[in-house]
Length: 250
Ligand SMILES: Nc1nc2c(ncn2[C@@H]2O[C@H](COP(=O)(O)OP(=O)(O)O)[C@@H](O)[C@H]2O)c(=O)[nH]1
Ligand SMILES: [Mg+2]
Image (cartoon, rainbow, N blue to C red; front, side):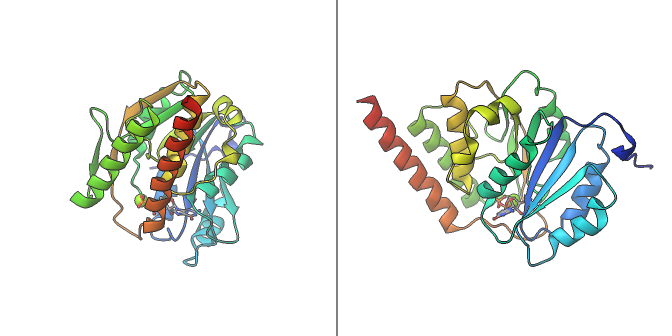
């Protein structure tokens, strides 16, 4: 099959897919090949934190030089997923993009789900790919991993009083207005808490949110960067936010 490359195209894409990477050398080529097929639709920004396995080199040598639609933001050290998105959004907002997609670099999120989510992009400020609404699911997770995620989302919903079922999902589309209005750069968290914090900000700013069912597949290759610290950060964030909310309500 011939892959059409859009650097011959004159109209700039108004969607950018931002993918943070840390040690994704076993996934990145296949992922970019797959996403490149859809070049009509979006640009791609990889935010790499100086991965020791040379992820950014692969992106640079195979893609950035050849395809004007794939960009690479190289950072000096591993600063966390939230921080990678803050810098990615900042970079992308300076360009003319209107829609900003968050997507993992390990095939946990699928191209088909992305296409489905994009059909809602003009009607909503934030579209969340949700595992916890009808039609959504996770594949390949152990029972304990699943339980952790389900409980975290249940507790988050309960404590924050927000009607979003998958607040920790990292598969999303933000509109330009949404990012510009919510002070995303002031967020402090980096793991799952970052996704919760961004959801909370969108709610507080009365943004229109839509959850779209997705299937999340646990990665086959490479390693998860989830850690105790990331879980602890989310717990602390929820307790602190609830405490602040209760104080303000009084
Ligand atoms: N740039 C950057 N990317 C990260 C960092 N931590 C995780 N990622 C990327 O974020 C995505 C999701 O992380 P992953 O480890 O798969 O988390 P999990 O799916 O919750 O197990 C992957 O593409 C990772 O490479 C980080 O500190 N910096
Ligand atoms: Mg993953």
